[in-house]
Length: 179
Image (tube, rainbow, N blue to C red; front, side):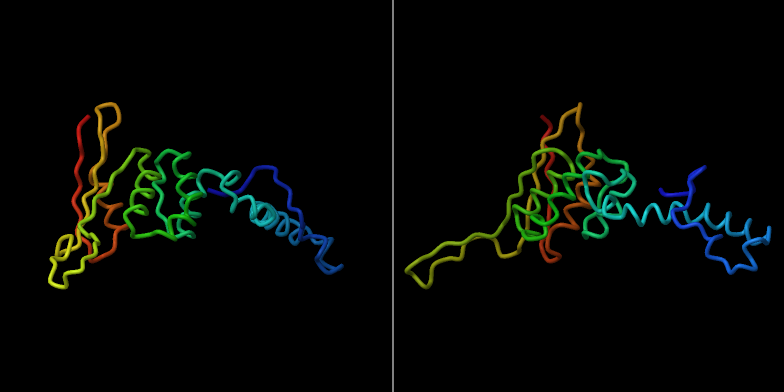
């Protein structure tokens, strides 16, 4: 995270802004120097704020903060390239959030593996008004993921992600295929 930087000079030193009678006071000079040291990183961060909002230039430790701003959770200990890809796709993901494809894209971006989502709903047409309705009575999804010994899937994390991504009324089940 941001903090003090040894030797950083303030872009706006406080001592020259003092009234004339305090500019020669050693205590006021030292107090201003101490405040300049503390405020220098703040001013530098504000000057570079646009860089913090750009996924290509933001520091790695700012990715969870950006994710929070975008309404997306990223794993702070996860792969940084995956985090940046996930946040870059935020606009597309929010547009299709809660849909089968939206869940697949979000999980693929978060986990870096192919994900297949099967849903219980269906649609059809019929000229017979008494025809049976397609799909199942209770909405549910099955999330299918391929796992290997070299790249195991954290099922608890996957389950938590699915719970966040799916609509609240939809049941879900995780299926991990060992490949």
